[in-house]
Amino acid sequence: MERWWQLLLGLWTVMPVWAGDELLNVCMKTKHHKREPGPEDKLYEECIPWAEKACCTASTSWHAHLDVSLLYNFSLLHCGLMMPGCEEHFIQAVCFYECSPNLGPWIQKVGSSGQGERIRDAPLCREDCEQWWEDCRTSYTCRSDWLGSWDWSRGKSRCPAGAACRPFPRYFPTPAALCQRIWSGSFQASPARRGSGRCLQKWFEPARGNPNEAVARLFAALFLPTKSITCFHCPSFLLLCSHPSSDLTPHRTGNHF
Image (cartoon, rainbow, N blue to C red):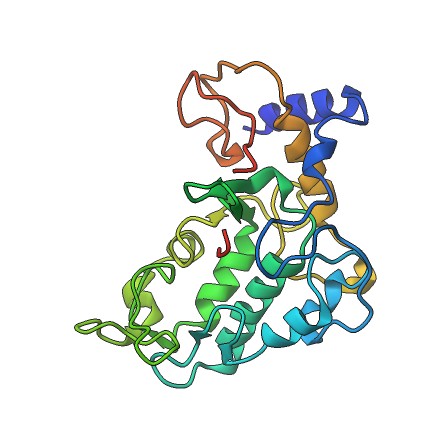
């Protein structure tokens, strides 16, 4: 597997600088995203890492920290109070989704009109999924897919009839299950670790710079808008091969995760 990455990284270094640039430094076309990334010096707490180049506004970053966010009227309290460590991961995930300009290779259009966009299979680093799962083990939820059906009769998400509140591991038995199911495949659990250059961090220390920029550039280069590429033996974690004749070009094809 390592030889695959040596080959791919070698190809990447000789590609023209414009390769895949249309997938870099872009914002999703959704209700709360800015049209293009730019500096935001008043982002709130967990959204601060994206202050230099953000797709979110200060107002969006503040709403991302509410237990019942006005962004989507989704309640983190649908099964009672969530443990602080667990809640922090969800706030970081929302900040990542709303603020990051480095998700271009994984943006897809949604809806019959094609006006909305979402991310699909964005590869989160192994540590991100593992720590998220570990810190949420003692918190409760009633659904394994948070983009599924909820009871909205009171204006915010409530557990539907018959959906029992249980500890997270009952709905997400592994870290990979949590990352991949929680928002209907928005994230993919990558086996790659932080610092490898092959996966995205949903949060990072601002003083150390944004590690996701290099990852987005790598995947954007791999997703060049060329003819369909036949791919029979790609490493599975590259997320490029779903069918031998599949088109590897990402399609900027919603208003949710």
